[in-house]
Image (tube, rainbow, N blue to C red; front, side):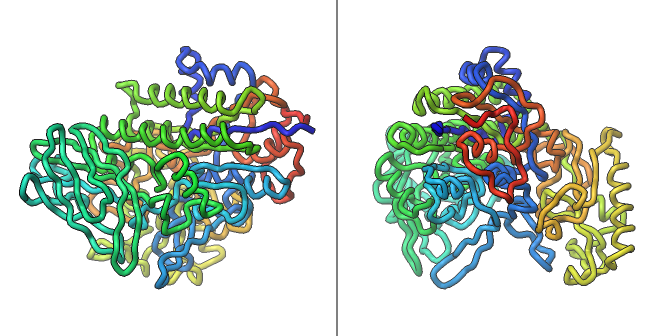
Amino acid sequence: MIRPRVCMLAADGLDPNILIQLTGEGQLPHFRRLMERGLFAPMTTTYPPVSPVAWTSLLTGCWPAKHGILDFIVKAPSAYYPTLGLYDIERGPAGETYYTRRRVPLLNELLQEHGLKSHLLYLPGTFPPPKGAGRVLSGFGTPDLFGTFGVPALYTVEPKALPAGVRRHPAVHILRPANAGWCGELQAPSGCAGAPLAILEAPDGVRIQSPAIRTEALVTEGAWSGWVSLTFAGERSAAGICRFCLLSRQPLVLYRSVMHHDPRRPALPLSSPPDFATRLAERYGLFPTASFPMEQAGYQEGLLPAEPFLAGAYTAWEEQLRLAEQLLAEDDADFLALHLFTADCVQHFFWPDAAGRSAEAYRWLDGALGRLMEAAGEDAVIMVASDHGAAPAHYWVHLNRWLADEGYLVLRADGRIDWRRTRAFCLGYGGIYLNVRGREPAGLVEPGQPYEELRRRLIKELEALRSPETGEPVVEWARPREAWHAGPLVPALPDIILALRPGCALAHEDARGECPTNRPWVEPNHSRWRAGHEGPYAPEAVRGVFLAAGPGIPHGREANMRIVDVLPTLCRLWGLPLPAHLDGRPILAVSNR
């Protein structure tokens, strides 16, 4: 049997409805070519429909309660605080050690068992990278140099030049006048000493100098610098890379990007094998390594205007695309998958789309698809997959505020939750927990009949909720966790799962387990976060995309595809046996030849 080479564009957030519309308008010629030649399916995603959960289901063929990545944010066991859903962190004298929560093998591990070579580039949920299984460059979940998902900085000499909501932001640093310019401090990660920072006037912009910067950086007004190498010393050393953008010369406003780990000298595992990231950087140049290649936190928090944000984002996505192109052209791997946040990012921040920015993102992805098709060659199978689509977020829903208004959650005088009197609370994007005696530290809901009665009552009340703003239903459905999920980790899930109506979205504070004290439980969304998928929405409401063409792929449409069906479909295409633990099944239309 001839096993075809497969190249997958993992296009985060690519929405089937937008894709169909723009393809029909003739704006996406490469997507249209695949649709005309191959198989297209709007694809049911996971619950909750969030990137690390969904991509892990695609890469394992299993639903979350089996593979172990349950949410962005999960409740810590036997506790009330949130923790990361991707991995555990063990902190010691030598630094942090990361342990994935994933419990089943990824696609690249399966391929290695059968002698097939693979590259996974930037796929969410691949940090920490699996050891000894193909080549993996980790994606979303990879910490920045500060150990977070993104800490930028904004330097200025005049805080009044900044928007009112930004002036007191922790990322804002005030510079002092100095000879021929200004001086300040370049912030360093924990355990390292900060370094002096000098910003000097130049004919078209500024020059940036610091003992932590190997070479002087020149930034022109309105533009981004290239990658700047950083080295910090102290109790421990750290090597990073960042970019600067000069937003204004008069008065001076300088943005510093998130500090990524330097792939040439990483302090934590960025890839598998460990030297894969280093060899890529030495051969092809520097590239993003943190969770988000674009400055998502900077734009979301108002530190960056739209145009420089998008300019920097497309530069980063181009660097990621170029890595994949070069590997396809120079390497004989059987499978390569490249993840890009392009559609997801632009939809989050620019929906509705009066300036055509979503269409621009899809056109850019169409060009990226064409370049991957050319690099992979005529005999390759080309696939496009997305983890979910998108829905507008017109209103924020504060479920914890509603629970407090109804007496299920009780606040102390200081505004914190009183766990001794609270019966139900929201944490994460996956639903509502009951405060069960014997399971939680201060649980008061008795197991058995009292637990079931409270759960039934809450489900009934949630499904009857109407927005005070519009009078429309807020909740699509609410269910016991076991009615939806199956797998060994069902007991770790929220007791009640629910799907909000598209147009409503769970407030980020509630996902962190917080309860606002002075806001209504439904309020209009005036933030920069204009659309999303996390909802929590029903998986059918924010479907992803599967599109494939090439040897062994028939032409047509598949109506009932699920994200867990991608891995078994690939196994069928390559003639590999299906692992017994899979929840997915091959698409029946794909033949084994």
